[in-house]
Structure formats: structure tokens, C-alpha cells
Image 1 (cartoon, rainbow, N blue to C red):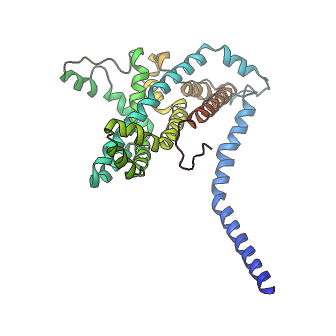
Image 2: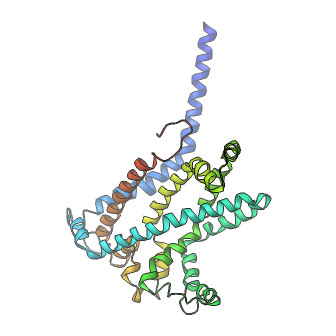
Image 3: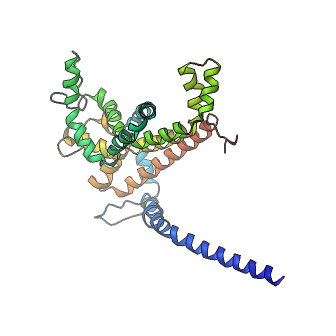
Length: 311
């Protein structure tokens, strides 16, 4: 009996030490979350009900910022542009990343090198990528139009023609697809080979095997990237600002390139309407939350879970 109690005490002491070690390891993240994420979110929520402007005295304005937000036509325009950009970028990014992952799967021992090559652009700052693509997509002297010219194709003015502003931004965003490629490649490597062999014995062709075996087995990865790409697209800022609202382009920028985060930035740091910008941020947070909830509810019906559960 005494030996049993002694064993229980040792077990409890070990559990307490492990718990303390666990709290110690997660404490930097908890501090960072509270100080750099949760704290600023609470402050911005408070500021959204004020006319805070950095320079003038701050007053409580109630819901005035939210009322102005719904009456401001540029808010609706920037939000519409953001939705259009997301509708272009999310499916295009998934198709391109999945296609490159399938190619990597066939490269065998060389896949490691190309996996690194595809991931390197992720390490490039978005501002640098935007500046680089601003040169590549130049309508008169850009490399892309020069290449199209070799085939007798006259390229559009990617960065000045209002009809091509959002498509060019979606193309530029493909530069950061390295992370999705790695996720898809890992998912493809985990598809059981027996399933392909069984499908082959049943006479299934490559397309049928891809649709009936590959897609269901990697549906979890696809589901994850759809959500993360959508959230990222709704928060697009750095490349759009660099390409269309930099020091040289800002004066001639078209409203067709005005995405939501750029308008939020302009109100906060160019017009110093911090309260209004905070209201913009919280509306975007609510929109993303609603979209994500809908995606989770709908997406769970199409995602394959090995345990058979959708939760």
C-alpha cells in the first residue's frame, strides 16, 4: 500500500514538472500573442469608436466611423476589388501549386533541388517581389511582353490598363506558392500506392485515378490551402501597394487596383484617420470570419477523413 502511494506521489511530481516545462515552453508564444496580437486587437476595437488621429485630441464618436464606412464608396470599391482578386488568385494558385507538386513527384531524386528552388521565392520580401514584377510586367519594356512578342502576341499594359490590374496582381501572387507546393507534395507522397494499383486493375486511366484516388486522398491539404489562400487574398497589401501605390505610381493609381488593405493603410498612415482605419480592420475581420466559417461548413462535406469523421 505504501509503495503504491509512493509511486502515485512520484507520478504526480513528474506530471507537475512536465506541466511546468510545458507552460515554460509556450510562455513566449503566449506573451507574443497577448502583446502583439490580442492587445493591439483590443486597442483597435476601442479606437474604432473614437476619432483618434495621432495629432488631435481624441473623442468618443460611437458608431460614427462604422456609419461613414458604409457610406464611403471607396470602401465598397476596394472590397469588390479584393473579392475579384481573391476569386482569381485562390483557384489559380491551387491549380498551379498542385500542378508543380505533381511534377516534383515525378522528378525522383532531383525533387529535393527543385523543391528548394520553388520554395525560395517565399523567403523574398513581398515588396521586393512587387518591385521586380513591376519591371517584368511593364507594358513597353517588360520582359513578359517581349517574350509574348516572339510569338507574335501583343501583350497588354499589365500595370496600367484597368482591365488587367487585378489579373496581373493574381499572377504576381503566384510567386509565393512555394509553401502550398510543399504541402501538396507531402500529401501526394502519403497517398497509399495500393489504391493506385487497385484502380489500375479496375481499368482506371490517369484522369480517373487522379479524380477518384488522388483528389479525395489530398482533400485535407486542398481544404487547408483554400482557407489560408482566401484569408491571405483578403489581406493582400504589400505587392499591391508596391506595384500601384508606390512613390512613383501613387499619383496615377486607378481605383481598379485599390484593394481593401491598401485603403485601410491610406486612412491610417496617410490621412491619419486611425479610428476610421480601425473600423475598417474590424469589418474585414468580420468578413474573413464569416467566409471561413462558411468554407469550413461547406468544405467538411467534401474532405476525406480517415476516421470517417468530419469534425
